[in-house]
Image (cartoon, rainbow, N blue to C red; front, side, top):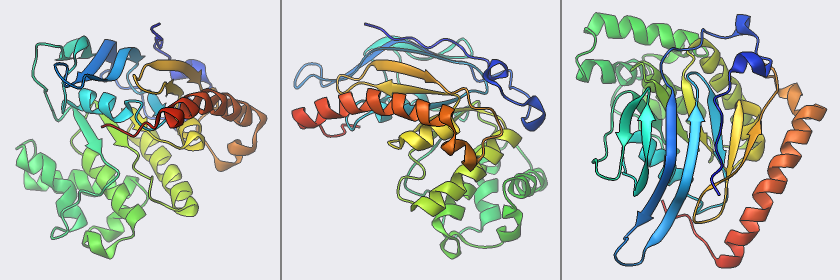
Length: 297
């Protein structure tokens, strides 16, 4: 059975337009009946089966599910690091992945992984400027101006522009990585469990910084996480994936207004959404545990 998301406008999701940057015109992602099988002639591990998702430009989508459900496989396909066995992926109507096409990474999709990727020998400013300079999209003066502007908008990071990554906390490093992604003006920002290793206090702080970035530099975001509370608090909608072979079990529309505040996590609406997510994920986690599943990709 194929589960399919419908394009959701956040304007109908209770979102305050005064608090948000305009919805972008680009960044419409279509995942159509995608399946992925590893080693089809041998072990034949089916990671994804018949997944269909529609994400409107500027929407924030979170993907949750048990280990081994194919979350990372799906993100790798969107990023252009892997191909599909069946189905196709389109970005603004342009094909990104088909069974007969090779993987196509591109600057229109930028990934922030859970393990840091900043250059330790470059300053914060140099790290952020790196992408547009290497791609010859900006002059050095233009890149520096844009980098400083983004760093200032994203929680006052301009104050540490001359610092080196090892001098910063892990949370601040992660914020710099997101700014480094944003300066490339991607259509889609892919976040692969970026806060997984953080303690509760640091993670709560990072949530507020990410939400601020989302309000200021609105992009289509696909966010992978094991944390149900995090998914509901940040996203416009949450998809729950089944245990392997991964397919889309349910879609949770998050009707919490923006801007989001930590107090919302005590509200009746939030707690009801959390209970719905827990019930959906628990069943799949139990199946995965009983089968001894481990994350494949």
